[in-house]
Amino acid sequence: MASEVKTLTDATFDDAVSKATTPMIVDFWAPWCGPCRMVGPIIDEIAQEHGDKVAIGKVNVDENPGIASKLGIMSIPTIILFKDGEPAKKVIGARSKADFEREFELV
View 1: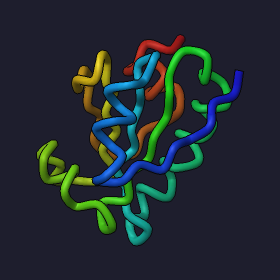
View 2: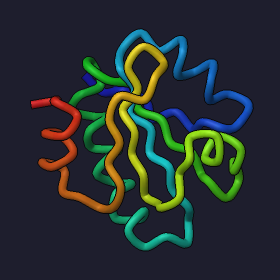
View 3: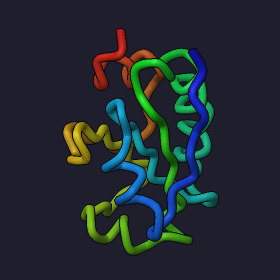
């Protein structure tokens, strides 16, 4: 079942993550980041294929530095799995779709 990818901001992040009814994967990225541009379509595919198990969000760190700073994100892409509103698993850097699915226990 496909899930819509939510664009999250400093203003909407806490509310979206805390109210997610499933675990939520959030991709922290920037438009100028080459590895981020490789990861973006992979995260979109995960949303399409695993939307019944996880919610997906994306945060542009250039436009939303507050939440990135609060979470201590120093490198992008950083992809974090939140469970019950709390960070449960963090993956830094570009990976294959299979790696993300394994890391976030989607397979």
